[in-house]
Amino acid sequence: MDHRIVILGGGTGGTLLANRLARGFGDDAQITVIDRDDNHVYQPGLLFVPFGLVEPEEIVRPRHAQLRAGIDFRLAEVESVELSKNTVHLLDGPDMQYDVLVIATGATLQPEETDGLQGPEWGHSIHTFYSLHGATALRHALDEFDGGRLAVNVIDMPIKCPVAPLEFCFLADWQLRERGVRDEVELTLVTPLDGAFTKPVASAHLEALLAERGIRVESEFATGRVDAAAQRLHSWDEREVDYDLLVTIPVHGGPRYIARSPGLGDALGFVPADRHTLQTRAAPNVFAIGDAADVPTSKAGSVTHFEGEAVAENIERFLGGDELTGSYDGHANCFIETGFHKALLIDFDYETEPLPGRYPDSHVGPLALLAESRLNHLAKLAFQPLYWHVLLPGHDIPGVSASFHSGAAPSAPQKSGGTQ
Amino acid sequence: MTAVMLAGSPVDVDAEGFLLDAQQWNERIAREIAHDHGIEQLSDRHWQVVNFMRETYLQTGSAPSIRSLGKTSGVPIKELYELFPKGPAKLAAKIGGIPKPRGCI
Image (cartoon, rainbow over all chains, first blue to last red; front, top):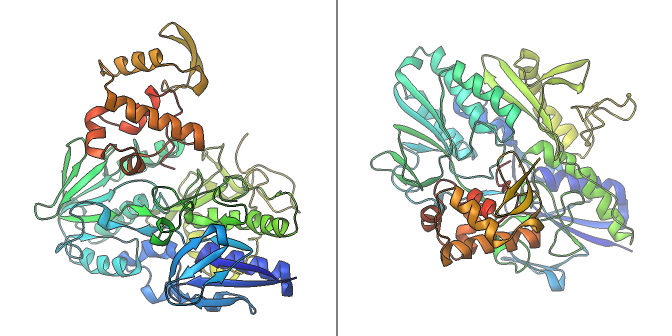
């Protein structure tokens, strides 16, 4: 019998999952991926655009071309999901029935949620690098910026890639030094967190790196509104930060159709799901993957990639009438660009915070955890081809396991990526 | 983990003073924690937030962030900061006897 699997979203999660499922089911499933556009952006590349290290067109490819033959790709806007009828309503097309639905529509930027952010100054003294258009506009603004107060402001968590604002600070510091104007610039990271990062050991390491570079951290700053005319950030508890150029990371939420679908999402539009099986609380035949899911780990490509294996297994088992055994452990890793051709790497899961060591083998490496190295930087640059050719097709990356505590591919001896 | 006495009851708390077991909580404990953080009297508005936090946690296994609190508790964010100065979500969770909201990962 033909199983009807509908995947909303053709980004990282939707694409790699569709490809995994297509391989697993062959002709036994009809897989449809729905997205409202055909532009797949390699999002880790956005960070490099404002600094001219990557051209915008280098990080965009057609979504449909990343999908295996036999997968149906449709351009459409989702109106809502009617859980009780296993139906997706489209704004401009016929209803779609599903046996299994996957929510892979990620997180959207919602600058309109913050008072004063959008207005005549948007694109002038206020920018973001969290979209391709924004990152490109910011490049021009940075080119012309040779003195004053540069504030990098995370408005609220959760955000995609929580280390990206830090990386932006490191790269800005580097570029301003290269241009010989660093002394003219006051660079401040304004964050709602109580430190540079969410996990204590990594946070301490990162704060030391920021301090070395003279980057100020304004922590526990919950941004309430932006006075764009006065170029000032106001927190809810009435603190203020002045800026000349604001790089904002707007509030994130789920896309609008989630709010229009009773029972599917939470107040922010994210979809509550079991943190191990990724089955949603909304319905047993609905799964979530990637940034769209409300699970207690980072919103990051590595997380989405590692979730893919468990979600694919669970969908196969669900359709076969079996108990769900696929289990994701919260494994996340990310390279953190620190400028000067260096980067550091962190690796963690639900239970273990990022710690110093080597990766993917805890004794041999070759990559250093929580320490800056040139090799880590090269690995970050080298990742884009792996993304298009290994990760999106739904393969495992050699030597990198989805599960945190196996640390290496099954053929290698069991070594932990971190400590118990 | 440390065992401490709060309002005459033994409770287990983490390094920052958040209760580890929501079942060990009672309203007297809530008042004592609030008092220790400079809230002399828990008003009806305070209780509305604390109870909402606690119920959400007990139902879903996680405490709401400030932003979802502002959208769903019936108390706007501005007022949340007046009721629970500095970190409303954190302080209301502590008073409500539930773990520190993860919110930010």
